[in-house]
Image (tube, rainbow, N blue to C red; front, top):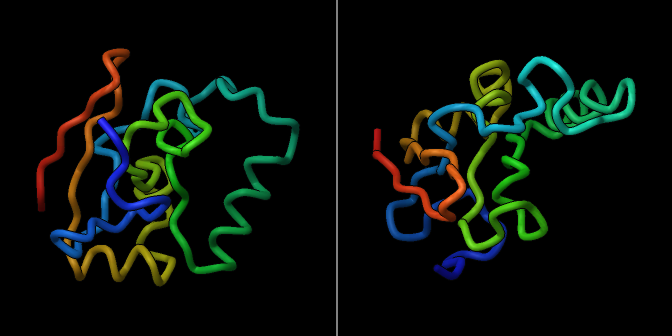
Length: 114
């Protein structure tokens, strides 16, 4: 499956925002530093996105991530913690969401619209 919209978490057909339905297997918000981030890096990522009023894209859906064939989706962990604090998250809630199931090793995901 090929990407349909470049690097945007926005769905061009529905004008809704794609958000992971749950944390992916290596989410930076899971306990244990599964992404092996250097000390302080997660705080930098959070602070940068909050300052920019933007959502964080799930790393598994980035074009250089584990599942580059998937269209990008916002990180569930970030969205649940900070989505209502940032402008992009509030807009996503107003426009509507498409919840994307995290990949489970078979390189596909399906979504449910809110």
